[in-house]
Image (cartoon, rainbow, N blue to C red; front, side, top):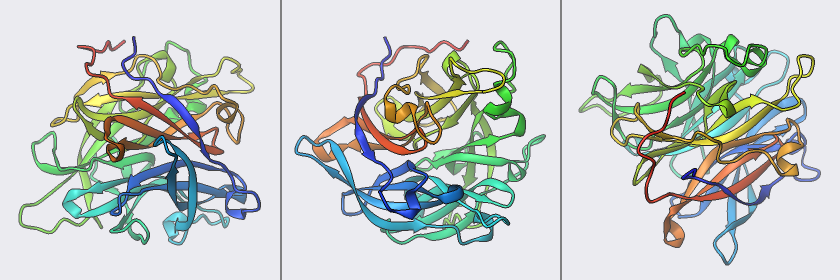
Amino acid sequence: MIPFKLNRICTIMEPEAGNEYEVEGVLNPAVTRGPDGELYIFPRLVAKDNYSRIGIGKVKFNADGDPFEVERLGIALEPEMDYEKRPDGGGGCEDPRISYVKSVENYIMTYTAYGPDGPRIAMAKSKDLLSWERLGLVCFSLYKPLDFNNVDDKDASFFPTDLPSPHNHTSIAMLHRPLFPESIPEKTVKLDDNRSIDQHRESIWISYFNLKEGQETCLEHAQFTSHYRLAQPVYPWEKLKIGAGAPPILTKHGWLMIYHGVRKHNDCTEDQPRYTYSAGVMVLSENSPQEIIYRSPEPILVPELEDETIGIVGNVVFPTGTDRRDDIGQPERIDVYYGMADNRIGVAKMTIPDVLPKYWKSL
């Protein structure tokens, strides 16, 4: 029995008719509670030619406490900086995640800046979620033989509280997924199903920004170090690629991370490769997040609905945001917001189980 299971609530957002900012989709949102207790959503809005902005909206709930619609409030970020714009006139601020990071007393948004060098992780901060100040690209120390500064990188999010690094320094921790050229699904789909996994180049990583006692914490120009390889593809449902999803949230079992995995679609051929993006769950140790306590051997959500199987990119569920329902007195309920076929946004809910399996089996 899988101890986590997502139950769909609704398709909560889809492209608005006549809105030029959304003609190619609304997808992959961040969600977080604001200072006013309201739930804010930050969808990726895709205009013509895959030009992406990050919007702002407020989630509305029905009498049963379930989310059912979004009130659009405007734009949080759009491509303005050189690292967000491409020479051909394109650009992108994509796929945000947001955490309130206590040590900097700000909401921190990580997002994919799609600029001249390809996708890179960028940051912005806010006190109120309505106005945002850019902090620039994330910088990494060298990790031989890998240089994260010169490789595509996505799917980044912060832990909300300070944590000890592998070297026991008090730090701010960030999940991310470097995309080495040989580790993208377009490459791995062509390899044998029993291929060996390149652990360094196909993993979700945790990197740390070490805090210094007595100094003000500032993420601008911060250098992340103490890189730790967290997880690589293990199970058949995630064999081609895994990536971090929603920011981790603390539960009674540890840090809950909803992530995505990619496998070959049943109709995949050499001439027409097709993929299936599904959602899974990891639970990480509260005080040592490098330790995986539990990992779902099967996906907790797979593309089944028409909204998930037909779209800009079909057969995709892509989790990027979570909301713990303390607001209705149900702290064990987690609502998960996810992209649907790169075109719409869905929301599903789960209940944190009372007990986890004593172990998970690594294949």
